Image 1: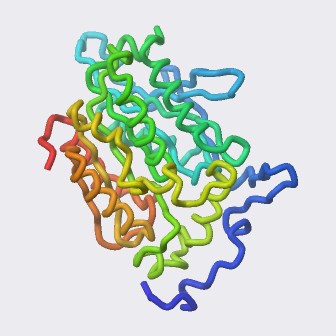
Image 2: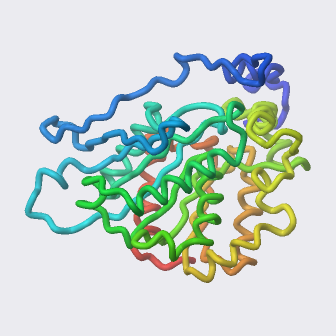
Length: 334
């Protein structure tokens, strides 16, 4: 990839709204292109031949939040099996302003993880910005964790090992996952029987006011140009906040004191990324900070690629799944 911002292969992006296919409205909301992110319907009937079943459950009617539960079909079909499966609570990406748990790209990503990892996934549909600025997504995340604790939903009560729960997210979802994890670390005892074992941060969407070397180098990276991430943060953060707000910059002020809880609870943290992502310098700095907080952290940064490349390239997704297996199934943290 060329370092020259005016390279024909990486033309300068001048209109981030056009790049995102959104239109700002006078009332502070945005109009999204309904065709940009196709959706997939759930498949809840075990008589269907699909290898992964899925169904939607309402969490909060007034907030219009819900979850999509993914379950290996074989788990229901094979009634003789008594083994319960680990639970992954997953948060989709989209820069806090786009996508949902029904977006095909995330529906398929979750379905493939269920097949390869043999887990149950609860994929969270949280409120989006700018209609709902942060911390709305984090609040919705915590509401889902509390719902999982108390629900009598049969797919969870019947097939999930509540003592093996992992919180995962991609991009903005990874940002939500670590903020939800920090909040959950304060009330771990109150979430029982749910026992969180670790956080999985897939290409976490983070930022800051001061530009990093990778941001300067990849300012016009076509998958996530810097002006586009800047706009998404502007739409998502509380009014008047800049990118050095703690929701965006996890290193500000030396990092959250709540990471101490994560270390004491023995949770593991996995951070993945690649050097084709403008955020890689921040992600690596984030990992270094976690080490200073005595958090058991595992990091994997690959060569090439682009932001959340595993969502689009099956071979990369398979490689990620192999890493997740090592991390989730009692492999020691490095």
